[in-house]
Length: 222
Ligand code: DX5
Ligand code: ZN
Image 1 (spheres, rainbow, N blue to C red):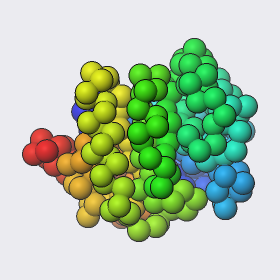
Image 2 (cartoon, rainbow, N blue to C red; image 1 turned 135 degrees about the horizontal axis):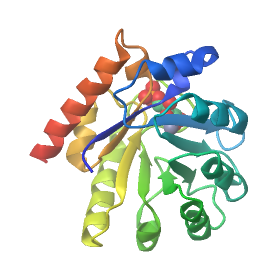
Image 3 (cartoon, protein in one colour; image 1 turned 180 degrees about the horizontal axis):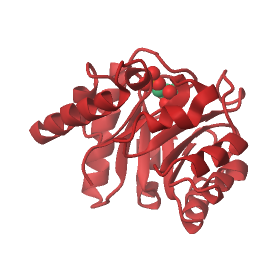
């Protein structure tokens, strides 16, 4: 699998979600940020809206659950048709069991790490995952500044994945733009979330393709 772009609809016009998603047909996925005002200090959308969006688009949905108790709530997103479900390592009580449950329900299983969460303690469970998300901002809001301090962790994650001979995708989320995407790709990321960069662009779909081109070139040079 090559470079993939998964625009976040967090900064789109949420009253017109289906129309907004129709503006980004070149996307590989649509990234949906679910926040519960407990794990992060913000509240967005939940399962009913997610289910409606799944019916309204043919693009696969990438659910990013910034919620407490994902062990309880994440499987429902797989049942609702999510192609990929990401839970946070900091919130999961039994991440291995949860990843297996997500896969059993037909979704790709993905785990996210906040900027200050290390990768080493999770090295042995990478084989349970289809994707690892390295957050490049503190989760909770779109439009924040990219944190360069996360780049060594992206590099380390890519090394661990390669050394284990795994096919785990490596996603970055937060502050990804034409200005920062090359750094992420060079460090080893291959799946890129971009919220404000895409939805504040005059032509969002052109931005999706521009981001993919830039990341593809940077990954080839890596
Ligand atoms: C932040 C969310 C992100 C956010 C990205 O907590 O997980 O997906 O929408 O937005 P930008 O690309 O604007 O940082
Ligand atoms: Zn996200």
